[in-house]
Length: 208
View 1: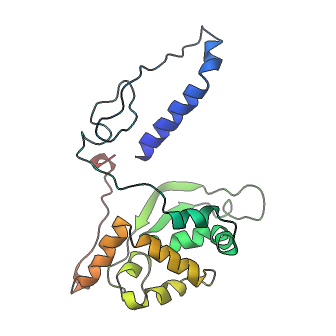
View 2: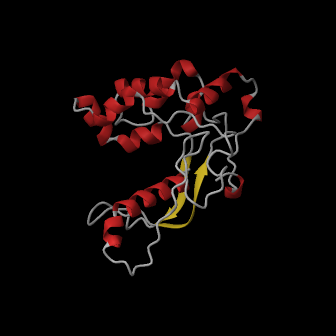
View 3: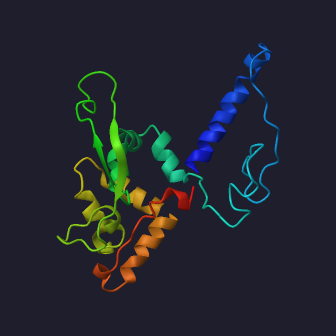
């Protein structure tokens, strides 16, 4: 879907500069033929895309991507709570992330002491998933969604001294309707959780 979004972005960029190309008839610019939107998911399609590229003719159904009102208020509000959320937005993102990021990066470039912040990665980037059962009794990442739900707020607050309890509660409430969050919370009903594991399908050819 990221790939498709970039295609759509390029489509709009090309469309917005069509007048420039019109002024130079000798250019190699060729207009794409307009193709009807997908009748199953209404996705915009390009001239040479196969009919089932976007949703496999209706067999793939995506959950709603509409941003919840409460989250919109945190992103765009001007009150103290919203300003705090945007200041520490990366901290909150990490606090509710299902996985952790692993990569080799240039620590000198990542310093914020001069110039533009740059994050230069060497090699591959990885997403690490913790064991479903925390060995030291201190849950993190996806474990926070199902390990000892009665104390979830306390565990999340213990992850960072920058977060505010009211914002954490609000984000927990927002994620209570997230399909991935719902699935992870259902794991609390599984006994012998230490005998199970979750694995990411890392072969990109399986699903674009």
